[in-house]
Length: 387
Image (tube, rainbow, N blue to C red; front, top):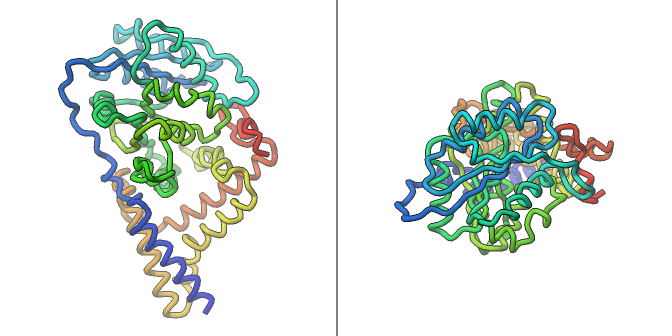
């Protein structure tokens, strides 16, 4: 009876997720930046890029942005956050190679004060520099140093924001998915993110769900200022979703996909992808042991129990569990297809989820050991004062 109950609950959970949870798994539905309209004038855009030891990618990032076929004025403020690898110099050379040195400003970042995460403090310094300029832009593009832009994605993104009067338009960058570690964990990272923050609910004003993808956030500058600026989320470890929530309170927002926005950051080992997960997993749970326990039980029920029952349970529970396993594999297919991975990976979603469960527990362990939110040599999880 117990196995039958567990199997039924797991199946009911997946029926709800697939049928009634905002269509989160339908990737193509949100990959919808259309050809930009003809405009007499395009609004000014200034990109702000925080960068700490990003020598491997910063040249490609700067070059790709400056090469965008944007008809309006677009420039970049790079905050070189105390890099030791020549990040600022590489960026300067990349801009000069395109004859666009005048469109790049490099400022040297300062040590974060108490209460700020490193990235948000760097962004704050870039925005403060922007604010001191006589001409203010319509939009700021908050982007990361490992993001590379292609095609005409910037005009498309700005066009969507202008046409719909958006306070924010954000793109979930297509993450690198080449090594075994990336193929095993990256598509699921995007799948789980969509499950936590269904993109259709993010766009709906009658839903509290708010999120953004930190690699590419086009924010209406006045809306960001009216919301209190980056200062309002200074200690947020999951900074992109915090910014998304901030801007959703100021007007319509949109979150979607585009193959023309890619992360080139390589993670060749499981530990490297695991670090990305562990850095913010416990923050997602608000540093709560109760939420952690609930999450572990929930993941075991939704992902692991169907496998255990399908492999060894009585006939009826086994049939229900097999149906559940098949349903989760099918739901994973659009994300796998987007990343060019074999449909067979869908069968292994429970094993992938178990790996995420381990990294979530490690996130809590690192937090209580005083190493929470470790990134580029900085411990950041405690700045929120949540302990």
